[in-house]
Image 1 (cartoon, rainbow, N blue to C red):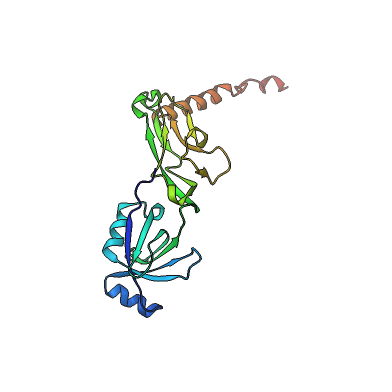
Image 2: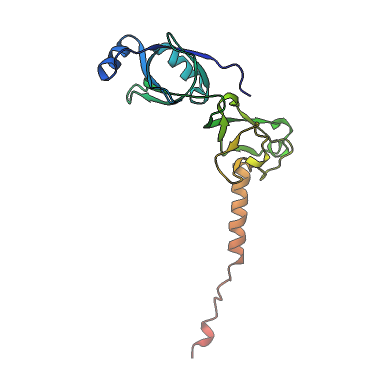
Length: 220
């Protein structure tokens, strides 16, 4: 489950529009906006190095932050969009949404795997295939899980793990209303190819043989 909510410090951005945004970038800042929560939008700047590091660390779009802005009350926020430079792929603008602890939001949560050492299918050469390395869940803002866990212990080649096999955190539920597959234990490519060839051979063997002399008896 989510631990202590990390702080994210930002500066009030004076002025709006493209001119103010360009000036912020020249000063090593990334312009942004904080919206929602029944309060007027707040233009902000975030130091480029701080934002870049958090983006590099991962899970920035699914992490709840305690935003601290001088002269403003601390507020819980989550990033909803990062605009990037189309050439350099560096952040140019960032959008945050204010949240209450009880707010429900949709987030993609990473999937962790356990039990690989005790999986007969993998020991026989089977491959663990992650169909969904992340699962979109509806979660409570104050209780965002770091990840969800699946176990492949005891699984054989051909077995699957679906969302119904997962013990989801309290208050979380999938956005998809069906029992979808998260991972499976697939056959090794060599075995799969051999099986395919056997099927082809079987099909060829079932084909009726032509009667080489069948037409000769009809000649007069």
